[in-house]
Amino acid sequence: MTKILIVDDEYEKVERISSIITSAEKGIIVDHVATSAQARIKLLSECYDLLTVDLNLPCAVGAAPDKD
Image 1 (tube, one colour):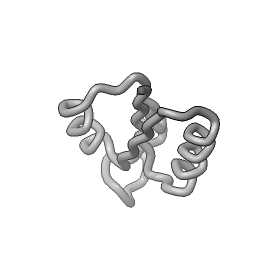
Image 2 (cartoon, helix red, strand yellow; image 1 turned 90 degrees about the vertical axis):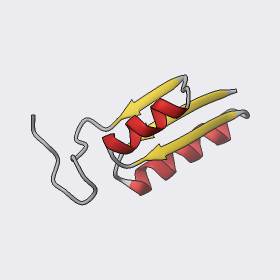
Image 3 (cartoon, one colour; image 1 turned 180 degrees about the vertical axis):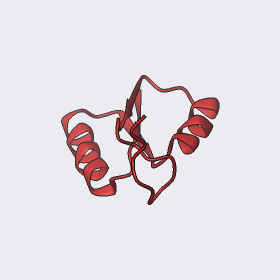
Image 4 (spheres, one colour; image 1 turned 135 degrees about the horizontal axis):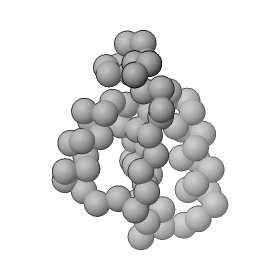
């Protein structure tokens, strides 16, 4: 079983990506978190085969992306 973690604050985009992945291949689990803090917690408790991270991810939900 393949596990993917998507770290992105745009819920509609994540839903589209998840839908495409899961419809293309059986046995793929896609998890989603919206912040880097949530991602750290998930990564400490679970193993993933693939991690995708939004490069414009803000520090907190609703905040503007950090340019650094």
